Length: 518
Image (cartoon, rainbow, N blue to C red; front, side, top):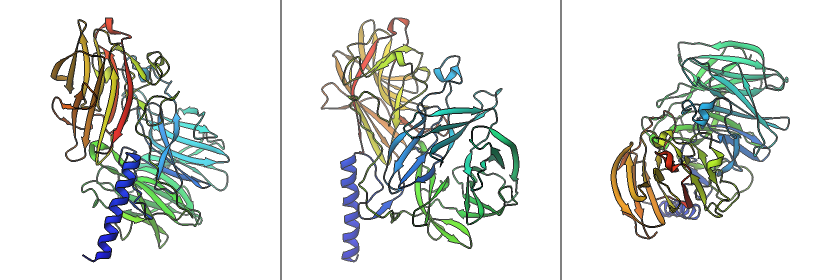
């Protein structure tokens, strides 16, 4: 190998490792003017992206997790950090409070984000929460992505919406599944003006979804996907917003993760006039990860990637200057007055049963009654990451009561965890996998440390515990991570619930959570 090529490769690896060590989270920035996909090796599905001045904003689907509709911010399209959420909680159905059932897989789907006349707009659809109820469409508005946000719920249902402000003052939403539609909104974007009109129903691409609409040089471009793991990105083009539309496949590629094609995302224009596309790719139980692709215009069509393929390592977008490497937050010492933006609850939290103030520097989780973890409220989660990641917690268990199960694990269906279980005033360290107790070890003490390691190789998670915070012992068996809750990836989870009435309000105090790439 040429010594100069070898030196370049070694420098790339060194820069990545240094950045990862500094941030203890995956970064795509190689530190030398290039980036390597994916942008964030975690679950940021159905991305949409905009530019507002010198800032870029990316929004993602979050389904049932609260707060919902996460928004990340970047200065260069490569380095991202959390900026806020458009939905602080869901107040439209008691099942979001786990009353009368649950709301798993509901909430926000396929978010769209736009900025118009000083206001941020976030739209999303919520599929029917039960088989007998219709879905709905929501529009959230704010002057700042940090909030406060106001949510308006429409009676109309618009699947996988793409919000669009035309240059003549009209407002539209492109939406649909299989058949695609345009619905015109009133000027404030908060109600329907003209009912939906079908614009595309073609045998060439009989299934399209995930639509986002743009107007470029007088033409309307509708970016959609054929969906699924082998999905492709399709562009529809017309001189009129209602069509007729011609179509072209703009990328079909799975070479970076075979069997999982690049599909669904949003397009953004830089200040220099160039275009880029953020598009997702399924990475199994770790999630649907965003990739950054250059756009090349060929005969008036936006072709993604390079020579028909998604890029792996590529030159960063030119934004006029170099910005420092940043990543979305992960580790937490619970010393602030608010939870970090990396955290989301499994449903609306019961705010009477958690606190950052009752014991300074700790997250206190009080137990609520539940038969098993999937039925428990106040399970606090954040994304696992690839290719390898680990989470560790320190927990004070002196406040537990009989019936309490408090600990740390990987949440999805199935889930697995390591925890302290208290019965008859006696405590045990247990490891549970899919609601089955695999291991139980007597425990005496006030503090315990739990750890979980995750790998994308076979999508496995393993568990360990420590009684001194230094030496960790493996425990139980391996979780084969899966996607029983379709389209939501596995997550690190902190929890405390009680299987007995006597344990209600028993509390666990979490001192810190540490995330590492190993």
